[in-house]
Length: 114
Length: 115
Image (cartoon, rainbow over all chains, first blue to last red; front, side, top):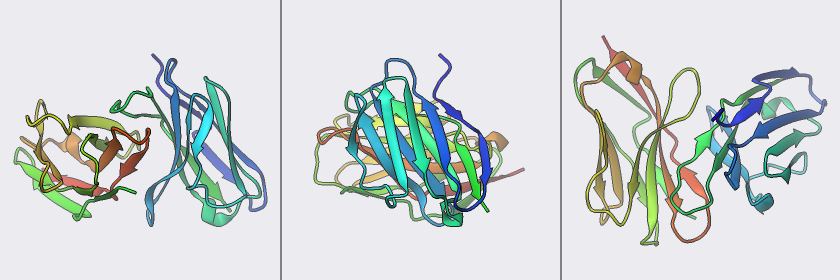
């Protein structure tokens, strides 16, 4: 299995631009999570989906952030407009929905907003 | 919401020695799962070990073992015979067995291995 696939690995953009991060979960997994990692705040859960349905988006910072999961094999996290404080590593992770199953992480997207 | 606390931002250990990383958590649930993840400089998050709360026996994976104290809500990770490749950030995580699939992570412990 190829694991959780994220793209791009690095993204550099200017303030005000739209940024789209992409994720392909492991086939058969029905839970998908988006995390943001910074030195100051550690790992923060932004949103997670079960069976393509958003379950908890309370971690989404503000309306500039949106996430979609149109099907079981693809999810996007969009930031519009981007700001320098959005600079972070964004991780996508997937899991089987059964309780107790471990989380598989992608390699992350390093986002830099100038 | 459940909270996970790692009180040691940084730790160091001599190569071949043993080190223990601490983790405590707060929950009112009886059914849950605990994890330790490793994040090396490559930033890939790797599962180190997993513990079911209903099991009294401590989980072990080769040189990695845990000391799970359910009553004290403590879940420490012991690394034996430390190797240079063990240098990484280590995150403790909690997953509920009842209220959905939420994972809660601690703030991490940065482990340095001294040759």
